Length: 245
Length: 261
Image (cartoon, one colour):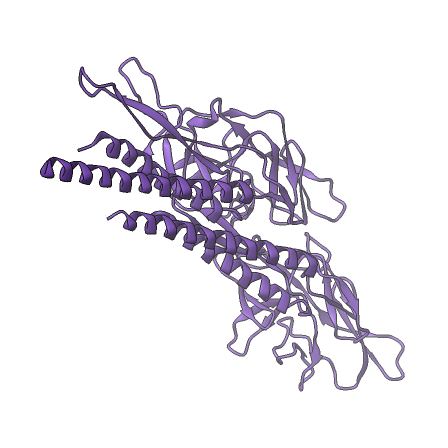
């Protein structure tokens, strides 16, 4: 079989997967705290014997996500928090600690601060945060310190500090569902950030960029298919020339 | 071809967002209605190549693997706990809660329900009842010959009679609070039911322990901000269209595939 077809096949498969990445980005264009994904192509060389030159194939080699800040949407919700700057909220799921930028929090039945999947939001030390039942107002400072006021002229009480953590290499984060990331190499407290109360970070997917990429992928794929057609014709011609010759 | 299904999850999510927005707009004049907002989260990722797996015996690692997402799902439609505007009505049994809390109502089944809609009336036997005739659980009976009812900010109900200057205290209206208000189950008719997620209700005197005050002669308006809803609607519609474009593009790619032979 012709090498040209095999080389092209890898590319076509990769383009199909890139289309999935684009589709997933656009499907998550309204997902709070979503970070857009990119497919990266890499080259790998295949030696094809002594006589011929080596063959270079392309394939999907990796991915990267754009950690750019998403726009903050003001919701006014007391427990809607957004991170402006670096870092992630730390939550405790059944599978272990996870990192997330989706700060749509609420209270559990026993007064713990939890995210929308019911996982407890942690301090950077890894302990959950409890909000007293008689709290009439919850304030979250830019550094994550949570203070509650019980009304009746009592002084506000500090109940904990929401942890904002980060990892050394963002590329090592593994994506999980529910807008979670897991950090297999551990995490450390993040700097250069500010927690904004009453706002949610929107998805950082740029529709213009995604649509442009989608068109590019589609046309590249069609061009690849055209090459298959040409190659098919060429082999056919060769066969008939040999047969008739 | 997965991008077709992925785009379909995206369209379904945007469709649901439009449903939530249309319900908010439909309730822009409903007393004490609290707008809902749909939140989404991404679906599981297929791990083709996990970051951090080793690529050689000397310990080099895959810096960034290949993980491909499979779409989006709605994660929650939650109530926004905003205080609606208090509109004066001057009716003596129109009550608004200024702050947090709910009135407790007894349903005909004996079950308790909770509401912030304070449009009350006098029932046949002097009870304070909702528009549907369900009584307040506090069990206050207004005497037939009471001329005027006065309800203080902390819920004390005082009846005044003809020819008597001194009022007569006939009971107290209490408010209830929940640990997690967003966990209440909406029953329609502006009523909510307690669930495991909301926690059990705590009865409080208005104005204490975080409960709001009662305002007589006012009704709480709807918390819907129409301008915000319309801009969300535009966003949802364009999001829907973008996802449909992915379906078209994927379809054309499939067409190119089938053209080959």
